[in-house]
Length: 80
Image: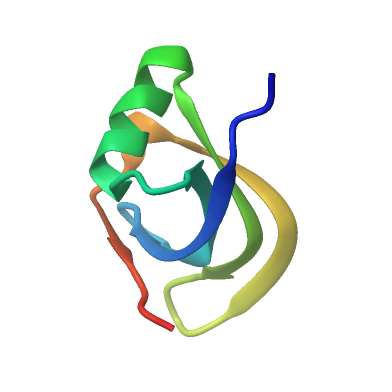
């Protein structure tokens, strides 16, 4: 059985990097609830259509990235 999900644009702050991309959460759920559920299943958070912002201003785009949940300093949803 597939669970309906929605694509949410987020900024993820790590110690030395910032990421802008999409995470996929259960439809109608809060970001915090989805992160809690994901952390119980895996140590990693999948991020799609990701833009990595390096110190010094460089950026790199990747289609898919797995982010170690324990390395996340802050995350917030970007309103479109």
